[in-house]
Image (cartoon, rainbow, N blue to C red; front, top):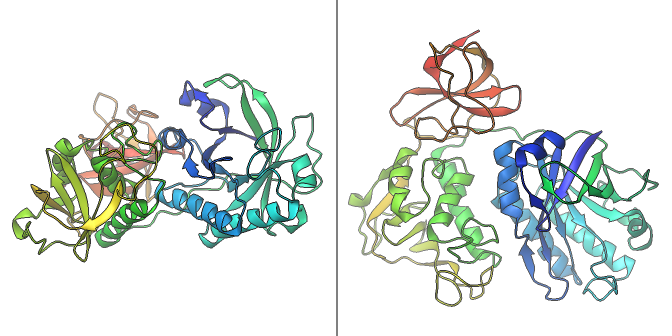
Length: 450
């Protein structure tokens, strides 16, 4: 049996490396609907925990706490979670679970007094939205809740169950994928008591990676900006600017859009408008400012990055429109509430010359395509350095940070070579896999075929 930890804002992680050494997967709370306000929000630690799992190579999934009291709200909740899975590039190792339970002990929460018929119907509508998006799904509940507060037999036929019962054994009568057996586990790397479950089955493998052309990457990055602008859960903030509470500022939004779809501009050093130019040019963008009429926008193409290196950035989305994170509800950069309070914190607007100092266009590699490296093994290689261990980097080039989870690799280390990519100078780098799970880039000159 595999051990699975579930975490939310209420958990404090002191060492993700220790967590990795003691559990097999982590289920992260994506968000919830307020039990009194009725507003859907992201868990305050969702992106922080998600990025940590990705960075440390920990298999992960997510759960959401629903409080829908109408069919429309249930659909809204399902769509919110489906967008989150897509927006944050979640490569799920387990289904997404709806956490169905009482909110307040006195049953005063907005969904606490639902009949079992209505609660089951709303859960099914939530699950159907995930199913339509191609996302595996399940329901989390206690044995009591499955029996007395849901019509268990009427849940969608392919719904996975995650059963909570803090006892020596699970007495749930039907089939279940996970059993949450305690809320008082003591796990190295987690401060205080935490929830722990047994997984009765295998983790889902990573999705097959496919090559994307430059045009496909451009469309995905631009669509991410448009979708994020259309979702009121995402507003503007310069303090929590990397999506920690759903918000972005102008530069973090544009950087995130490209980073999520395989263009590692953040890894190359892009963190704000002042260093975006250099980082983007390293990652397959070209400066096309000279061919653009900045006043009218003539010559712009969908996906062009509009940059003022001192103050602002946006992306052009076609038809005379640009999309950007702009300002919070108070007309300031910090201090607003999470989410878009005005509809104009993160928005699509008519193109205007900010003024822009650069227009950057993604061209990809010299071949005309920029793609996610293939994870299928091409050949077995051996590290063949003369003296020093070989550094493993997060991208193809010495400008990328060194991998923290493995490396440097000693001479003679056997690795799998999955793909070959070129750095900005045209030099070949290998995308390698170490011990079947850890991936990174090494310069091809230092690897020989076994």
